[in-house]
Length: 436
Image 1 (tube, rainbow, N blue to C red):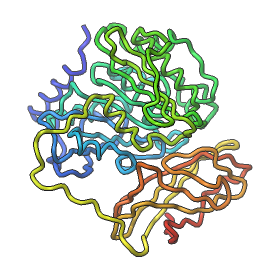
Image 2: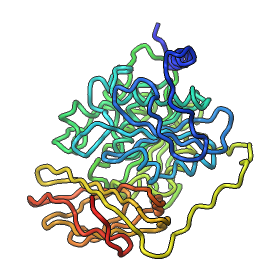
Image 3: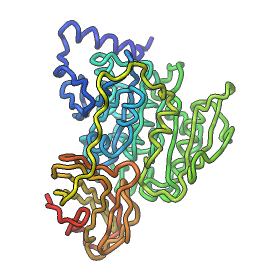
Image 4: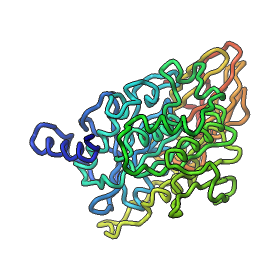
């Protein structure tokens, strides 16, 4: 008989109490992002950051929130709305940082044989260990664990739901791909990937079988799945949303025809696939005209609502919440680092903007010069205009604030005619930035 994950968590907890596992330093219960350096088995060599809100129930839920390629846990903490929602609803957020280079910078491993095997190693085992740690250290409710992520993190979201259906209650995947979409490391972008090359087309049965093969003896409940994709996404093609729908509806034994469809917000076309009880087991959002830029404002809240963890904690805060710093007057000091990963006639660029000034920046625009022959085709975490020459990147709805000594990451995909140099001449809100 197979040992299920919660039994393993209980065993891990017992080992910790027996002194055979050494926990990290005493957690900081102030509402700040904290790094945990010894959370358990870590074959992926990952970093773990955790956000524990000041006010939370006795056994808070857990949301694992995962960044895109080239990003980091702290970057996703700064650029997404999950921490602010954690303050409102009292759940813990785990922000893993991927450490494996994959052409787009550091990405979550969804391609290796080890990562496709339950308990096989690599990043999935590291992430599961982070959840186990949060259960032990913060008394979190291991019956209410949820996954979400953007791009590479969206891919890992669907990956974890397939590998650990007894650990995760639900997931929300932004711009992801179905489980087992990548054949191996060579099939991962930016190479000639069959998965993300625009030609992937398997039957619902084939997709469902890929999930069922993980553990042929598993008969327990499956986590509910919410899927988001922009109709203008060219980096992870929009048609992969349909492949994910086919996979998860097949896993649940549901029809490919939605039981309902609506537009909960302008530009958000939602299809729901409900079971015989009327519960939507799969939800799919097509975001009209959006490129590789999700989640944008309000989408994290929709994900948390899908998880069903929107009841505010009943315990009042012991002290009034602090007032966020307002945008300081004067000249913002800034530093920029940028990396470029190029292939054939395409490239991706990741730009990290650090506010090195004393005050918070609320609302920003970053102007830079794109090398000759490069043209932006899509981007994330900012809007870009024009697509070549001197470009202005402006904040989107979820990342207008850059706190003092904090950073955010943005990026774009571009074509090139042979010149793969980095962007230059950065100015933030009209003031020059140091580079490097």
